Amino acid sequence: MDEKGTGVTAIDQRTFRKAMGCFATGVTIVTSTDPEGKPVGLTVSAFTSLSLEPPLVLVCLDKKTACLSAFRSAGHFAVHVLRDNQRDLSGRFAIRGGDKWQGIAYERRTTGAPILPGCLAVADCRIEEVLEGGDHVIIIGRVEGLDFSEAGGPLLYFRGAYGEMGCSNIP
Image 1 (cartoon, rainbow, N blue to C red):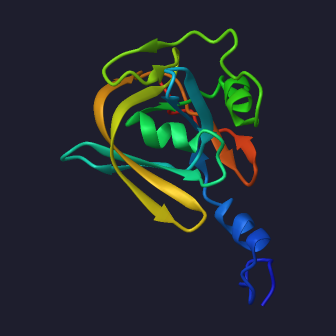
Image 2 (image 1 turned 180 degrees about the horizontal axis):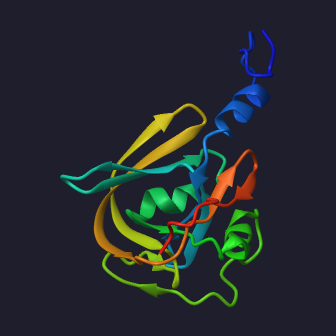
């Protein structure tokens, strides 16, 4: 079989990544604090709601993520669903190293996790459980604070690039 839609015989990392890239996903920034209380964060597309009762979400972080130990020790995190006009913010938090927070305003609410302004939705969470998942860590959080907007569209990621919904039903 070939890679043109009829299937593949070998599942290597490149092929797996290409296939999974066919699933359009929203873009989030996940934030927490390090042991000194300084904000940490990164861009994440591996996010989903998990349960309505209790309200749970999960994020998946690469085990090589520099700030992973901060997420584990803080006991809290916030997930920011980005708007379609927040590509620059996504790019800023996707880079390794540097001061991602320079010039960025944030506040702290229920859990103490840094909350970025202007996002489509924000879930402020306490860590419920951390699970191993291959080369990633799955962090399950109980949502203790929530904020969202009825207006605007999401920032999407599809086949390795930002995308747009291409529909007119966004209020």
